[in-house]
Length: 454
Image (cartoon, rainbow, N blue to C red; front, side, top):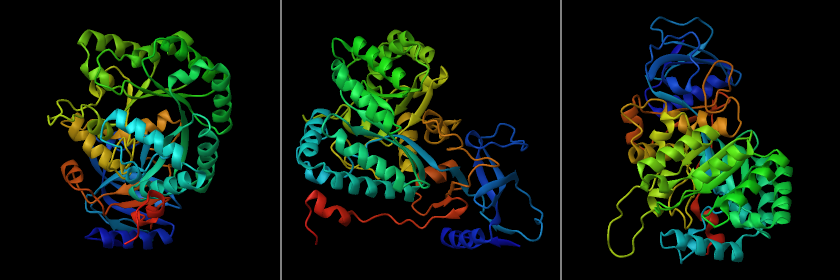
């Protein structure tokens, strides 16, 4: 029996009912070749192809060519009408501990220095365990609603904040287990590494929590020695590394190159992710080539944060218009085989005043800002399979037989349709069944951020 469901509401209801039976077929879905293990299906290199998707007991049982003839009796089949299906999102660069503090940071002015100072003041005044936990949970409910199944968050970790935020994160990770796989990275300035004892203590805390070691690689005079210490400490405790670097238009900022050189000196065998890398777009081509060749040799991965960097970089307060986009050179990186990803970064805080942890919005805006189209190519991997690999999450961010039936059914039937609307009526399917996870109301945070209820 094939059931036609002409609209998203009917389709959600039909799939929900079908999932109760434990096995169903979703017919005529449009899959992306870059994020689908196609098995025996011959797609002739096409970016998208029509298929029938069979789900059984929370896993993808089969992906078969879309068939026009009736399917075997005894299985409920639902006609999706050619709608696009993508795997759930993986977001490898966020700041859950900062999220939603914007209403109580009046000093925020859209600039990087303003964001730094106003966030620091708010952290000192307000970041108790309850405050961090409530804002984190709010943010995770948003991400879950939109279809994110794994996230990495940076945690401000200079003492005494580390003693607050890391236990909260561990509690949150346990509470969200099975819905969102959570990782955390310690975030301190690179100058923190000058205190070897403090750095070692932080590494122990991170290792005990199963986290990732990280820092903001500001261009300080002794940055090479400090990076060597970061790599040595990460090696000692078996930790991967994650850096912020070059979040500036200054062409002299070259921390990405220095991180790559440090990785080569250390012969580091772990994974290294570097975020932002904005200054690369302002440098001469000879410098860019040398840096990217070194990054490729060191095996680094790079994550671009298109919305946050568009918002912060080249911000002017003299009535003039910004002249550049603020993002890094993802096309040049990908041509060298460097793993590249997109992340949502900050959410409604002084570093980015907007956002809702919707990775579809991140991808849509990233496509427009970075020209990730004509051809689409394998760019969908930048919000799914690639960050999953960076985070060592086997099976996440891909669709394939035997994998969890975690995917998103959109209304759009082609890339233009998909990226032209917010797709707020998307159907997020986890373990084979549509989730019922409404967006939380901003009013839940009124008492935290100082807004009086109306």
